[in-house]
Length: 301
Image 1: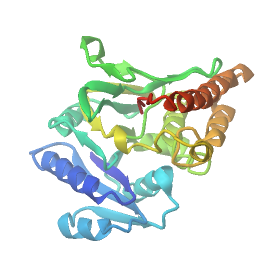
Image 2: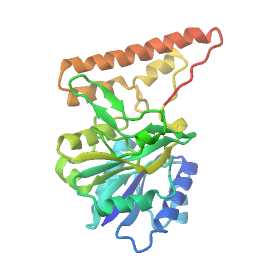
Image 3: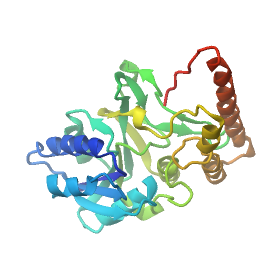
């Protein structure tokens, strides 16, 4: 059994250095393991010397190049297709270059894999890197009738309540282990409709609907640099408009409408989108006005 760790990058060499050093520090310590690892970096047009540094520092890493148009979902697809050319690759692990694993992450992953069925997709417990006691999320749930799409344990202080395996409907694109069987059954990520945001949740929710179990293991701990996630909260009307159409934004309205068109089962589900954008735009106007008297908004990503 072998796992391919897929790491899409676009610049961010400082993050990539730390990520690869952490990964190889752990997997090189796995002696006589029944699970092997292959690291694949998908470099989507970096201009900061990332490709050259990786080749020099970690020649064992496989590198696939893009021209800047792959985005996250396309990069994962390219990496997975590259991985599955090797017959012994049984799973791919979605990774980001700005996350750091707990020191026993890959040891725990191997233990889980040794008794895992091939119809299970594994998620990690994601913490806020800037505040390691704060859980960022443990997967998410989606109600296709009501339209609610929520992350489990979103921005909560870690506690005993969050120390058990939890079954969910979808997973984010970091620390997510997907068996080859899922790709064989439902295909690859929808990089046309969801090149960046929703590519992860759409894929794992499709897998859930096709009979795959989605489970988050609390001993698979990773730390997400939330300050490096997506676009920042808009401060001008021009930025607000851009945030609603940019592929880098989680408030891309076309992307949200496409997700609900594909995955929702009732027109009532769209009221969640109406509420989301009403609160987003209303909040922008509110804090714009409060900013005139010196008050500033604290943003959680």
